[in-house]
Length: 246
Ligand code: CDP
Image (tube, rainbow, N blue to C red; front, side, top):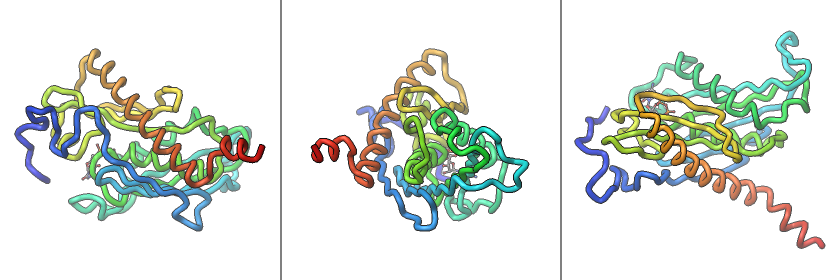
């Protein structure tokens, strides 16, 4: 692991990767990258590279696991063994089990589960290259993979972290900021601003928490725009098409 930097923010207010404190890393997405999945999305965010694949809705076996009145959404987050500096032992870990659980729950308010009672929707999020913020990157990719699979949703979910370094709040932590910072707060929210995932490592004062959530909201709004553009470039803008047809 690299050594702790002496400072994270210089006199000009710039971070080690040249960003301002309220700037997210560049994000690039591509939908429909896997032909055997019902929906998929490849997402790059800074140096993170993640792939999300959605299978279903399909019949759930064993049948005793079926939910009679709604579809079961299963979310599996996995880090490839080659995705980090030190090789990760393949297979589930406490960390990946926890991330899978809370990330799946982040979609509960938006997925319209009543449409496919007894069925299952499987979401796989594979981290190919990790550089801090992989759970949020995976959620951003999974939203688009769910939309690509045609799963009815009330809206999109976007996710971003805020944290604290050198006593200052910073949006979308990079690896050194995550490793050596004073706090890390990953958040996911619906496009209406309803928080669907919130975790915290480290310490923030109540005032910092409030300010941090405002920063994260702005970051998530930018991400929603990127997600929307990806959807429009893949499926077109129905409103515009409707207007043209008239
Ligand atoms: O990736 P995320 O920020 O959601 O989760 P984290 O547990 O805060 O991990 C931060 C970063 O540490 C990851 O993105 C990886 O780059 C790195 N990491 C690692 O190198 N080995 C692990 N076993 C777990 C994380």
